[in-house]
Length: 328
Image 1 (cartoon, rainbow, N blue to C red):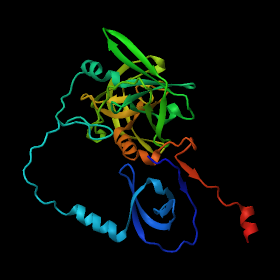
Image 2 (cartoon, one colour):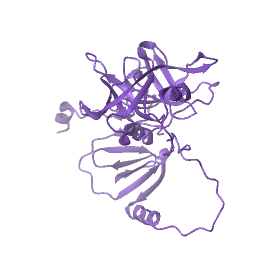
Image 3 (tube, rainbow, N blue to C red):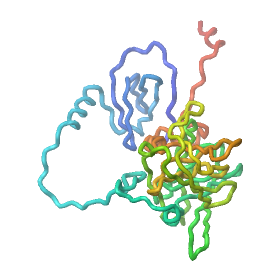
Image 4 (cartoon, rainbow, N blue to C red):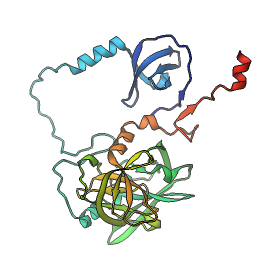
């Protein structure tokens, strides 16, 4: 994760410079035209904007010829290794920051799935209200909606476990914002309480494989009613709303469900519930899980910065007319 803000600059009259690939910490990379190499930062033009990257976040700088050579080497077939005995990982094992279920995972009924994965769904509380969320790995990283935590710094997460037929709740107060995507309405949080255990997490599915009419269900806290389960079907896969594409479902979605998971019958998250049509019934919407994967895979680009809580980027002031006149 970038520890410093990436600045957006307006540059004029820059001379042509060599193309390069900047490899960053966290296995990310940026390709563009190098405008300047300084002791503490690199300025690179990526086409539609200019980024200033702190040197302490750069692993390696490859100029165009070096990057091309590296790509050729990576594409070349590897020599056949000698036979070795290797441990075989189960399908669906952790693939990194989040996991997916094995392709052979069977469908189950909603009751069985709720008993298995229900503890992965949490309630996210702020002074302004509440929403839902779900763990994507056992280390306390969870997804919710951006609008649930927008403008908030005091966030708590309530986790629910069923023990002896009773709902056992535990609140965690040290919750840090890791990444935000305002336009995608997604947020990544992390529980940092010292006594936090390993949490039940859920795998991410593939919303592209869903068909209209497939059964889905949601778990969340509508109006604060924790662990509420609603079931329905996928009504439409690509509903366009204000320039974004959403999944439409007949599963009941209400305030408090925001940020909660929409599951298929294999127990995979296929969407993140985020809104409904208030004047109708059975008109709920969810962010497709493919957008969630993109957000997680590029979480460094959406990193939340304490020094600039409104955005991961720091924008420079545009030149004013007065300054321009004075310069002339």
